Length: 219
Image (cartoon, rainbow, N blue to C red; front, side):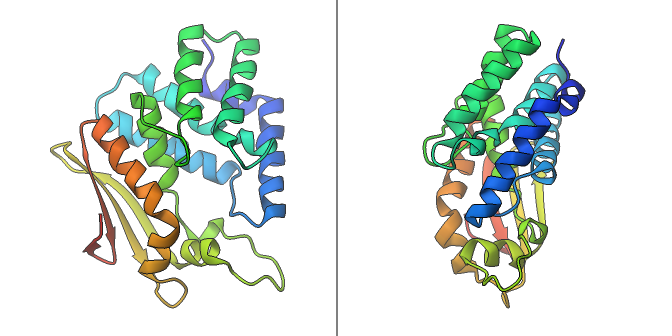
């Protein structure tokens, strides 16, 4: 059985994550390296464990999270599809069971808001976990660089919390935003499509999705 530990220790996977992030850095995108995939994996675990999914399903979601952005090594455009193909090759070579490979590849191939859909619990959890990773530390410090709207939005978020209520009927993304750096409208301009996908993902898991910014409900 291939574990998350095996994935984390795989030298090829470590290299692809680092190189993909380096390419995104050259293009001016926020951090997509180990901090990001670790946060997404933790959010996937929180979502599925809270909803009572079995531990192996939880671990498969964590593995999908760890691999979900390696397609950026090829190109940012349609990186979810190229990442799914790369993940298939890696996991198949490692000897993972085809049923589990299929679950992971499907989740990776459907995590991006451009073409993704929450076609499975793993895909739904990955979407919610990925899109909720908004934080100041994702902004890359580059001397003389002016912050674009993506950087301003991430830099403005002082705190982000993803929380499922006790009745397990609602998942809420609660953001505390410093409006000196980015406005609520800035957030909507770049993230509205992502939030609508989060709503669909939550519904796939039997939940309602709410977005709160500075104590105001927006979605």
